[in-house]
Length: 355
Ligand SMILES: *Cc1c(COP(=O)(O)O)cnc(C)c1O
Image (tube, rainbow, N blue to C red):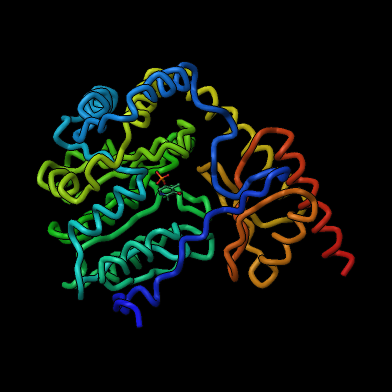
């Protein structure tokens, strides 16, 4: 006989991380192929001498740096343990049993998990045939029970991003007391000038909350720092729902130092974006259908052959991320890693044509 666990947990999928096997090329977790930015490791290791102290609960210096960097008031910021941690704070702040959370599907696998943990009801809105978010359908899915709408742009794992004009129309259709979260984990990788940047719309919409992270463009996935930009009453609620002292001193200082390396960050992101263009063109030349991507990954809509493709990649020393039964997501890595992926993809195509 064991203690009783909330029955809702029975239906919660376990978060499946991208595989990591030593000796294999890992393109399964949307990580940055570059190491931490210059000076970050030094700052982080120096901070390790203070491991017997609690971190600054309010992340005061990081919050001030972010406020300057983003030109937003510090009171609009809430920092957390990765943007997934902040997302959990968001859901806990607005949704409980019986409430509905609307989000696209297929999208970020944390969305159903944090929704269910809060006891709220998932309302999943299918993507368009181009693997993009269907914002009109998402607006249609909002009811009087909806407390939260999650918009992922660019969408993980498929790649397309939301355009500014469609997002404005969408916001116009969402009741003002429903929180809209624009998850911009990959915003630094966006090149299409028509794609929305949440900061441009933030001031005009009291129900808009932006979600950003140091895990992708800044290359700090292992340290767990993310933040929300939300209007003061929402940001205050998010801070209340944070795990106290969740963001370590090392993480806070590494994030501050990373913000000071903006030029180096942009150069690295440009290199990844260049590789993204090369990889996607190469795949299209091979005959693959690849949705647009504004992020650091490409999507192969393999449907029923998703698992087979991931296994074929692994046999060639490459880890990709299968999302059966929809497709595989492949992160853009360094040039040699991407060459390996293109080789495996070409072999797969020729075996398919032969079959
Ligand atoms: C990677 C990712 C995040 C960020 O996760 P962290 O917790 O900050 O590492 C958030 N949203 C989406 C859509 C992502 O792909």
